[in-house]
Image 1 (cartoon, rainbow, N blue to C red):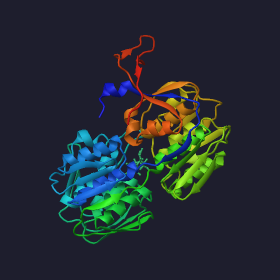
Image 2: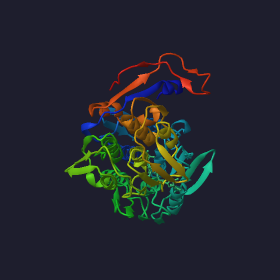
Image 3: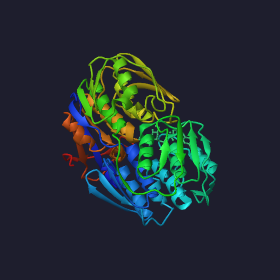
Length: 451
Ligand code: EPZ
């Protein structure tokens, strides 16, 4: 993990104006890998996971498992071996849990394995409050007593019993956690209005590979028949549709031509439809999607929604793209309260975007200009990188500690598509400029990226 000063010192330097061209493969999906790693707690044995993305969120989840007594080793690039047979704790430390929201996924798995979990409550994040009321109500329906003690959620139940759980909204996190808790409950659990995201279905696939019995994943009704014991297994994580979508948007915003390989085109349907409306050419063949962007493209109105709707995680990169459209787009964010925080940074690059609550009005401008900007979260980081690729001049993007949480080898992959992008390190001390308040002056030495 980088310390705070290193984080400030490390930036992407991007020379804009080059079209992305070529083929790139989709890495393993972060949002499937993290809950699947958490679910390895259920195995009480050795789990071999392939296609795990090399991102810092995976490192943190590995550290959480180790803090509970698991042994985690990287067998080869992208393959993790997790042995949870000697797990002896159900209390992961706040210092690790607070690093990522998905760490709360361990709660359901710990509850199923030890009949008790004590997990620090996730706070809010830059996207807005990250409530867990639906997770907790689900645990209670299964018979667990739930309380908040010293900042941690304590869930405990001598025996968990299968139950009918109706979610007020199709929460991804609640669906995963309830599914995990129900795997070893007595009897059958039905989750209604469940999340249909492919990553949730992948978690169900993994549970089944461990000997569990989950049916209906990918539909609004998931049925879990409790089993007595789960065992180790070997499993391959699905490809990351959100990273794949970012590269397709990269082709669109730079009027380039990018083929993303190793991805199910079906899971990118909402994005492909949107890009087509704008005038991009989208073609699919087997497990690949090709996007060809055009210099002048139409605006579009989009509302994010649960899968198969337009993914909230692709909203920031889409807005970056639409900031160059020939007209005005309306974008509604229906999942998170504060997912337009990055817009002020895009505005510093010349974008014309007005935000009111969960609505953004994006007036296309003729060009984006270079700027020094700061990524406030993972996907906003993706958006700022795309904007910089399309902008005139050389931009600097900070906040790489967020981008590295979700995008594996981002600069290497973009460079392979023809982007001019480098990771820059500042070697001189950071000194506040007197003429610009707390804006930092950063004398720097630029070093080429390394794998
Ligand atoms: C997952 O978050 C993803 N994270 C997010 O991706 C993604 O944006 C989100 O699903 C929606 O698709 C992971 O998979 C690790 P939710 P999650 O439970 O599980 C409210 C990324 O960049 N809510 O569907 O937190 C909640 O406050 C990340 O990869 C409740 O009110 O999503 C939020 O506004 C960012 N009560 C909304 O629902 C609850 O009990 C969506 O939450 C649970 C959720």
